[in-house]
Length: 326
Image 1 (cartoon, rainbow, N blue to C red):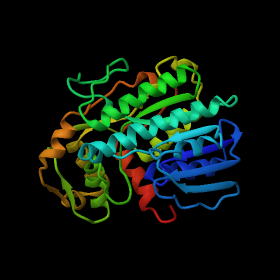
Image 2 (cartoon, rainbow, N blue to C red):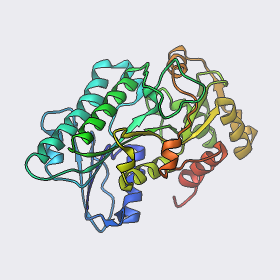
Image 3 (cartoon, rainbow, N blue to C red):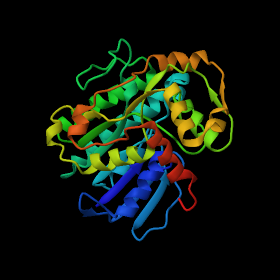
Image 4 (cartoon, one colour):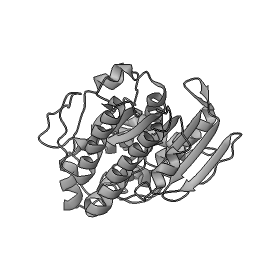
């Protein structure tokens, strides 16, 4: 099996790569080669299989066609600019998040026109495809009403994924990721970044900024769960999806106050004391339009799994990122 990971230099991409190499197979098929692509060439891991790393921008002419020409059997499309950046730079958001994805799908279609080719493609969407007005709990049949450019871009890509799958050009699975926490490393430009920051920084003995009220409620899963979603989507039977190719992933709905309470249970009051309240109207406005809780029955019935407590999410971060040897 040939595997392509686009967006491999990002946090989830790096963890996915490690999981693929550790398993050595997907769905019982051995991984023979792995291509890792991103806007900056990812670091090349040591492995017994052929690994290629390259810098590419899907929105540039010919970039997607070059990737499709190798005919990977399995494609993970994780590449995107994040919500805050897509909102701040309208043109860049549409160029990277929409045009790059459309060019990839079209390159796959044109490659298939040369001879039989229909790869499994796993696309990372977002719960940002939903926006107000919202019910307290969003079910699988709720319509897309994005209130950000990022959410709009992801919603359009979900429609493209379904249409290209319907036409038989690719075998697509879209996974709407919860906000992933606790994200390791430095903060990024995502409007949701503080959800991780108020846990990650205090655990490292650093001050964290909280830009919203503690009553803000959101939908979470860990990086470990995100990798599990991707791997399951790569090998699941897609027949039950029918024409609805995108799924809201299971997760955990908690308030910021409940996050902080979990931090105190796991790490003590000294960690909580490092959180500084500093309201940010721009971030608060973006977050206010996001969904708060889901009833992800469809994904759960298809075998996707996530954490059931925020304490567990924090402990996963400690085990995977702060424990020596990991």
